[in-house]
Length: 128
Image 1 (cartoon, helix red, strand yellow):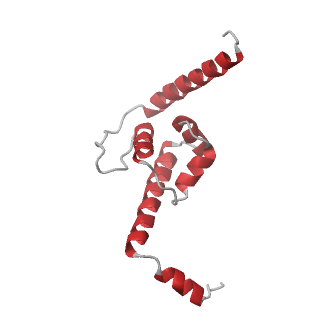
Image 2: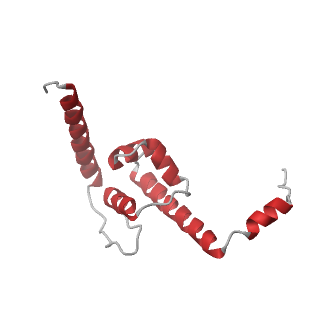
Image 3: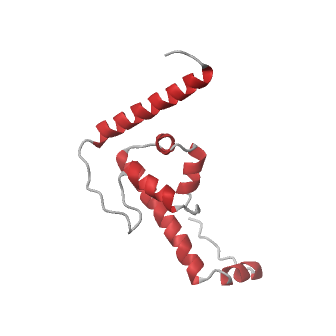
């Protein structure tokens, strides 16, 4: 088994010296949010693409969120909490776990698809 070599460089030392405790804490918190979101998606069986659709975002944006480097707005975090029924912010009220989430998710996706079809058809001047 190959052992990782320790690499020492003056450039790396200078960069690491510039990382303040505050910056390190911010990074840890961003990573923590990403982990909570990814874990919630995994437990609920929701793919990144499905989550992106539920949030009205592109899958590439969700990928950025889950990288742990994204600086979220509170509005986005509130929307994620609402969609996934989880608590990310301490100021948010704790929601009780709901029974029958699969049915609720199916209803939500059906409604969103219906809205998207109506919007598409209205642009194309097609009749349903």
